[in-house]
Length: 271
Image (cartoon, rainbow, N blue to C red; front, side):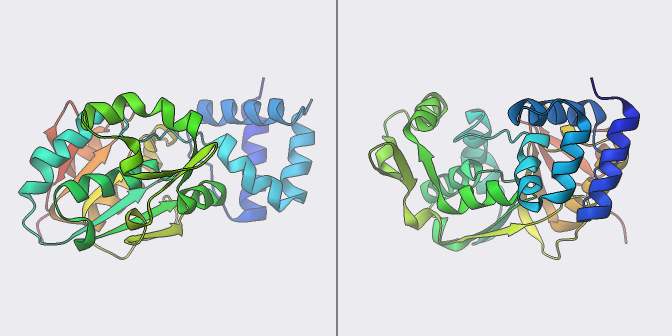
């Protein structure tokens, strides 16, 4: 068990050492992440973890992945992508789109978006920004390389969206892994970004922030929702995860577009 005092002390030490503030992250989730980390590295006490985190930068960068579990997959929740293809994107009048994937993890969501854009003849007319706090996850996302075991797990949602297509239409298959075809990577910019501390000075038609806010307390949720609102164009769309709960404050910033798929639309604030 990790006490509140131990958690607070460790988070303060991380902030002092690396400038990453986890103070307002959801405490139960962080405690679970710390336990995962200790079990993974056979650490018997939080003192051992403390020592490793503060002395070994490489260890800490990898530890971020255990503290914040990345929830992503190809065509995750296929109803969302069908809604985007059939309703949301056709409603956007722009001839080109700008899309931000906040908390992109290992990239499956980004490449799903590009596959959807291709079906609408918008792949070469759109720009995607993919950001994450984890260097490890971003490195995997840039490569777009996934094991065949992982891709097999994505087959059911893929076929719901594309009942008559093959994954080989989108991936180059090798012995034990497959790589996303290069045409789906050229319009993507990957960037390490701390969603709760750093600004993004761009405007987007669509922002994905799926299963990220589950780690935040109300203070951080307000901060992040303010950022997302400011980065959306008027009438832009915000897509959150099925595990995320839009707080009451967020309902002053975004209106429900489709409750089932957790798609919201920006409410423009009066000047």
